[in-house]
Image (cartoon, rainbow, N blue to C red; front, top):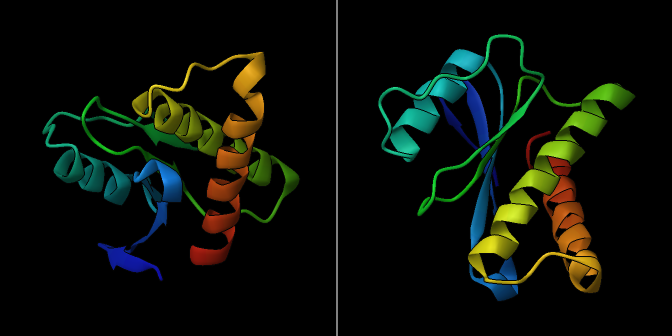
Length: 123
């Protein structure tokens, strides 16, 4: 179930067996910046000017995936999938799972789960 923060749509993806969550967001960059500053306790967080999406991460805090709008074009879908893969990397890193050929399925299934959750919950 998604929530809102200053117009920013927010959902959480609970990564089950990893006992870890990723925050998925969609909306205005300014709202995402304020949310990231609050959630990551970093008052000077600045999101890049021309970004099509980001995975905002700080050690000890859960990743925040942000896209400016719900994806409608192939490029927007690719951006969301890309940012979800960054977040999946952080999940595996947190779980101390080495990332390589032997664990690529775990990484990609985690990324697919995050992407699918974003598409469902941020709509």
